[in-house]
Amino acid sequence: MFRNILPALVLGLSALLSAASVHAEDQKAEQLHIRGSIVAYRGSALKVKTREGEAVDVTLADGWKLASVANAAVADIKPGDFVGIASLPSEGGGDGALEVLIFPPSMKGAGEGSYGWDLKPNSSMTNATVADAVKGVDGRTVTVSYHGKEKKISIPDGTPVVTIAPATKDDLVPGAVVFISAEKAASGPLAHQVLVGKNGVVPPM
Image 1: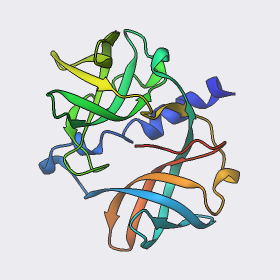
Image 2: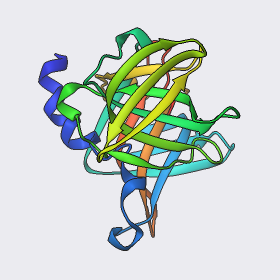
Image 3: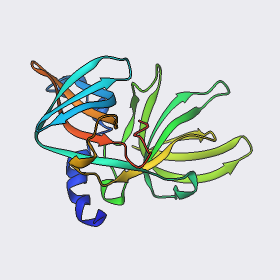
């Protein structure tokens, strides 16, 4: 089943973590990330209570895509894997991961680069290929490469590590946690992709 839905996920979610990498002059609409829990879902309308406590009505665009996340582990990260890592600068130098998304192989290259992210103040998102995965003296460290550059990111114990998994509209129930990549429209947020939590796993990005 997962193999069958991958093409749709690749088309629909390749921009999910890459909107921030688009240069402002190339943007057709301002990009929004909506994090919260579902209040109600019907047809092309999704009402979400954001993490800030605001109720937001999201319109689902024609052909919108849906997926969920499943638990993974640092040990699952192998050289050559394509990952998306949200991180913060560490006091001792370098970056410390806030979360890690292991992309399916078919999504390799989606939004490649390192750019500002809005998970937390001063956070960044790095979508890159794993050059090295090691256990270091100061904890777990992953070296990633993108656009000819390298970056070392430590992954503290307890950091959420997930991968993309299937979902259906039946998973859009009140209380389910969502991460929505949307664009700002005159009528409100217009979403092309939705990640929904299920089986106790929530989108950490």
